Length: 128
Picture (cartoon, helix red, strand yellow):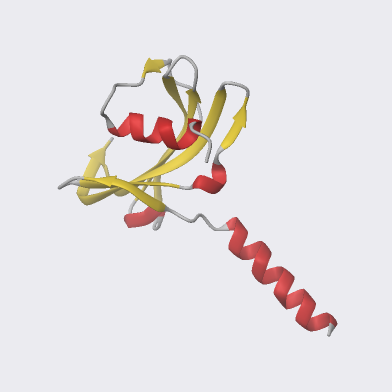
């Protein structure tokens, strides 16, 4: 019985640690996914991870990548955002070799209406 409980607990823990990417938009070159489990809200501020999956390889600083993961911070009241962390991956869906990563905050930018960033802002800021 102990062994069964331990196996069930390990399954729950390992599953909850995995990102569950939900597609929120796409065009002919990319698909954008969010991980709603990463949404953290404090007052008018929210943070959330999203993933951009590319249909063709992108190149940055000489390295090719097929996906990028970003953690953005959103000001829900002022409708603006900034990037907090980023990584680029050699394979789709954040898999493969990490070819670049950083964890510095960019400057605040306004969220452009009817944009992919606005879709992300809505997911992070609007209560469900």
